[in-house]
Length: 503
Ligand SMILES: Cc1cc2nc3c(=O)[nH]c(=O)nc-3n(C[C@H](O)[C@H](O)[C@H](O)COP(=O)(O)OP(=O)(O)OC[C@H]3O[C@@H](n4cnc5c(N)ncnc54)[C@H](O)[C@@H]3O)c2cc1C
Image (spheres, rainbow, N blue to C red):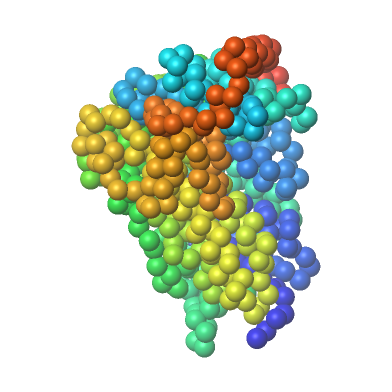
């Protein structure tokens, strides 16, 4: 076993995954002895979507020492408090998934149990009235969370919407300044070591051969190294996740950007709207089993606002995951590692958490198999829990108006999810496994948004006197509403602190 340190890292691909990897590796493992080379083919280009994030992107940028204002201006970013779901439960319905919790626990009993108690008595109480983020979002406002909020009621997180190509460029400049070599060329071949099947080198179309100790595959859906060369295998989850096609188009901005992503259920899938400072990202994600491309195009065209700035592009994929993201001396990130679908914007977050696993288990030339297996185990666990959360959105729908939604409603779900749903339906309790990306409040948002009411209320919720309870809830709601009304509108906030140049 050769336990010498890694000397050369080759990153294949210059999309969001490639440049996030280059930035992190150049920040955390680069030293004079390690060379990092990123190869991308500008003629092939990137997937060109992936512009809504979740809050850990804020930590990612911070860990790199990136100045937030500089980043926002450079990427035309806006703030994201969560996701607004429209038409999901029923046509015309709406609910908001905030990056935040709701209300406060009382006597160690979760807040939602008190809501269920009041509702069981016929009171009309709205979950969203107990979340600062929901209130801000409803009013189109934004404020940055206070580092030491006076009450846990006002704790919340935020993420960004950004222009993916500008983010890649931003990270490219960051990485190149830190010594990453950038090569624009198409890879034509991959050579393996004869003895152990590890990747030895990649050959560029112009004949150059680039060898390395560690290869990071960020080549997109095809997984040039992890699949093309190493035949790692892919697990399809299309029996649970029916959407496998997307049409995407960018439009001119109309009106002020809202501080959230919109996801609007359509007959055979859903549409996204991602507001940036200079434009809006739009797309229709649909199931090719139920919808033709022509009809999907008509649906998208009928539901965009503002002049189209690009042609409509089609992207197809198999929802699922690579069986292992780390195989031999190849670590796959981004689409090369698998893709569930864009709902809940988890793909960039998974790039980030996978990079963090790579850094935690950063190999030497011996590539310790136990470390590799542990990184794969943790990643697979994480992806399965996200998969379950996404499946829940489809499973809970009450639409029944097309074969797509009926089939989603009727499909059997993974056992891990079935157990969670059964426990919630019985007593409003949340089963949380290790390594869950979505916390209790997110699961509650879904059950509540889809009008799922547990059969029983926690008995302890009845221990609080009814008038005291109503008074407490009233106070919570009032203090949140007052605080939300003080905030600037999202657009005012951006114009005041971080306006990007108009393009
Ligand atoms: C419809 C859709 C919507 C999405 N929305 C979101 C979202 O809102 N939020 C989110 O977090 N994620 C989203 N994603 C996922 C997100 O787009 C990706 O996770 C992210 O863009 C990373 O992509 P990537 O870098 O892995 O691949 P790509 O962007 O495809 O980059 C692949 C790179 O590999 C290079 N390459 C490929 N072959 C070769 C070769 N032979 N030689 C040299 N270079 C090569 C390409 O040139 C390119 O630079 C979405 C995905 C889809 C399909």
